[in-house]
Image (spheres, rainbow, N blue to C red):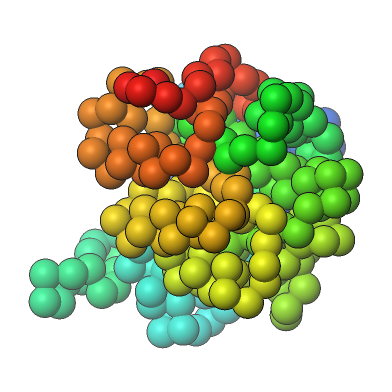
Length: 308
């Protein structure tokens, strides 16, 4: 409940007031809060989508008596997410997301502003998707058992959005650090794994874990290898060419990787050259696929070798 209210606190006061009175058991199941200009406020749970009526009640039905998001709500929420300093968050905005304390991440879209062929900003915000971050200590124990049942080797966690990749990686870091006594380096480019605030991780990623917060993944990986002598590096959403080069360099230094990518099956990986190249670096002995619609649940484990 506290994490849900913390996420709501970055939205407009009107929306926060409406959401703060919801039942605690329902709040625990909300994973996304969606704001769209002129449309009903929607709350996405693991079971489906719910809406608020104008009187503050929950309903799964669309009708004309729902709590609607105004342009003023969007403007105020956007400013609060940026801590009233849009310029300091310009890189995040250009990438389409803003990560706030607690590890909550707001996807933001509107009218893109281009310069030199690149998105440099945004105007007329049209919608915000606040993803509520949560810790589930112990949720990755079966994953760790599966990944390391034969030896301590790297694994790649694969799944569609909202399948729990980041949640599992966070708990993997904690387990490897506290129970396996490994030196762990978390390269947390978007601040979603450790949720560092003022230099201190807000999420429990383990006592033997170092967090490189806000580092571009490729740079963070190389710096971790140079300065922290990690046994394992944990990072989310690998895939770029520079990421691949950094992974190869780290593997040659004896580092094990626990990482994640967006892929739902082996065909996804084989059909995406950069992902295929990443798998073929030798950094990962297993591909662990997660179930869609059932967060943090393993559906298949594939050993890497040959053409998988």
